[in-house]
Image 1 (cartoon, rainbow, N blue to C red):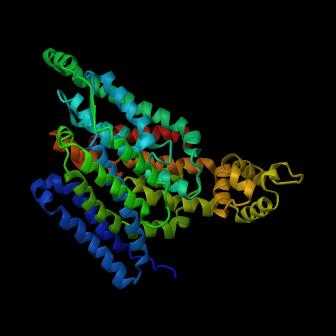
Image 2 (spheres, rainbow, N blue to C red):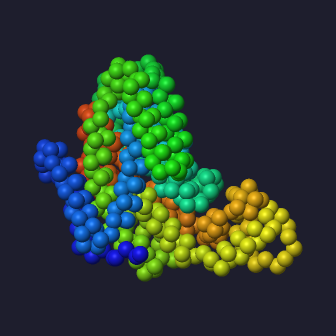
Image 3 (cartoon, rainbow, N blue to C red):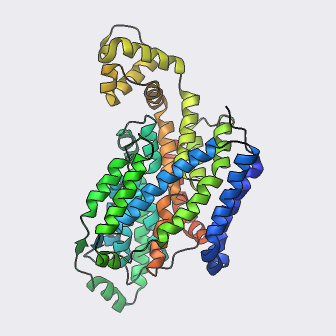
Length: 471
């Protein structure tokens, strides 16, 4: 049964919540810190009531609720486990040292996710810069480690993982996105270097000497939590039965919390306030964004999306204020519907069931479309092709990658990179901000983040990427 289209007015709670997140802390921070749970949950209740009692449609809410539980289980478990790993870096608070640390974070994000890398590195990054930490240090950390860095593997960022579950091969991102990832990371690091160098050179010589000479001795404690981190990362790939993945994540987080020494938590200034704030605010976001995502899904065919740049900017704009995972999936589905010849998919499916792995060598006059799709399948799914068990979804995705791979590149990069545009564009952003503020760092407000950093620094970078790869 088709879900009725929501009224345009159904988007109002989502707009109100976004406005409250942006303006509330700026207008009256004390009021906001006290009442943000009421605002977030109140807007969620309005949206839920609209779907349940006016549209009589619970399926979209249940689907978004499932996504929310998975999101919080992953974010929360990584936060708690990483909070049990204390890293104290040796080194000086010099610009080139900070650049190297952020570059390491960008690479690490692809192995333990942007959330894992952010939670492990943000505290040592703040400590090593404690003599001269500024708001821009936190913003560039969010740009690089919490977002742009994680574009090379399905583990790196949730949208890419969901793409993997929908049939995008595991190694396709690193093979096809590295040449976009590398200049983007390099550009942001270069801009950061000049920001940081200017700040360093404006310090009095005595403070420069302090930043250079009072480096700490290295220390790492809580390494047993790597086992629990591995459990969480392994659980990501479990799809059945329902909620087993999330249960394993919660159990790993609980085991980490119980087995970590209190002195390690104290060294990290660890408490549950940041994850509490993320849990409450994103509950409101996940529920109130349902009408917006429904509108995108039901009207994607009318948006005139054709060129890679159309997908890049559309996915990016929505990923800046919506969760980038469902945005990615909606536009990937739109691309599959627009660019895949499902008659050819059925033909290839029949050929594979007949010939299996010998298919590329079977005499016959296959069209170029079929040959390129078959080559893609043999490259990424040889076992399934050999056994004849390749699915229609895998064939459709292979067809899209073979003939319009640049569209998938645009969707992937748009979802991952634009998540850095606002604090709510990606889960780790808010957590990094909250941890930094707990550590005494003055962070930009929601509006200041966008106006002072995202627009003048990130947007020009995104335009360069568009001109170079998706124009």
